[in-house]
Image (cartoon, rainbow, N blue to C red; front, side):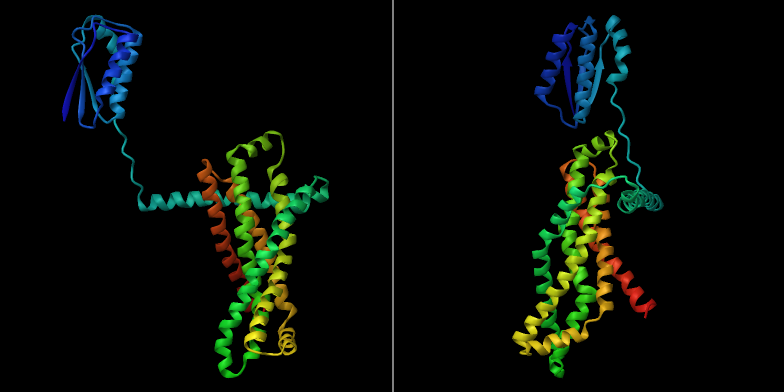
Length: 361
């Protein structure tokens, strides 16, 4: 630890105080230094000089040094008595470590608060999407058409390609196991059942969550950060009616269409492998495919598509409205929305599997 003694001028005012602080800053302060201000020769001090003395004490404190003054007398001592609270370095508060149960309670409270926000969003979305238009409360049809184009039309190519490749992969892997029993034609049955029940809906939902879910979260997060959401509320506009309802109705329309295209693409992908590699005649392959197709499986896939559509929009909007901070917050909430979408896709699929295979059968 080193001690730096500084001689104060005879008159400590605006000019001499500024020079004093600048000299200390030029010398620099380290964690182990103690700055001692010697006031023995100081006979006069005004309020501006006292302010510079306080500024010096704060500068030393911010650099983790120690500040001390001595030798004050007469009127200077009386004046320092007045400004003494500003010269004291406040003790550093130790952050209390959370215990195990405190941490659990904090997380539970946070989740409870977020769940309450989400449920309020769900209730408002149901009202403004389903009920309000029939009560004459209005609906943004122009935005709805734009959302249908963005969410549906622009997603057709990537969705068809992903399902086509997935059908090709499933046929390739299943044929390697079934062909050894001489039952290669049953790959067609496997493909059409798998895509009708599960794969088309799940793959399409993942594609849509990566495109639309992320876009919704990023759009609303940016609007929240730039205070556009607060501006809408200040103008008396209901945010859910203005922004959320058109997105929900648009994805409810386009999601079943995308899933249907995904089913067709997946079946065609499997047919490519069955006809080209396994060398089945096209008429035999497609007859087997049509024979294995069941309307119940298609209905199951469409119900999943509707559930996935509602979930993707609500999760994206929920995360968009909860953003905090600047651009980093937008990125974090966009990532969080996609991760939550994929998680809830699996959860919803498990629920449907339980209902269809253990309750309805």
